[in-house]
Amino acid sequence: MSEAADPALLDAVVRGALIVVSALCVLCSYRVIRGPTNPDRVVALDAIATNVVAIAVLFAVQTDRGLFITVSLVLAIIGFIATVAGAKFVTEGEVID
Image (cartoon, rainbow, N blue to C red; front, side, top):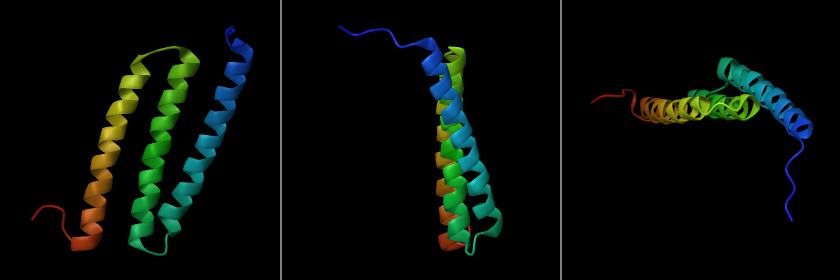
């Protein structure tokens, strides 16, 4: 009963999603630069890291290459570690005791 997805429709949706996620990265970059507080900057950097992971996954879907899924997993891990380190720096003033 399930039909295969139309490749042209899938390509259009992925391209649209790439444009939206890229625009969100630009908006988050503005918050990193002009954020009123340091916690705002850390949250914006975390959002950028999440958006970059989404871009890698969307690019993997668009090009049909599984390598970008691995890249997105590595980027997600690095983004998580960076967010934890940034949050610790904002709250305690140093990352390593």
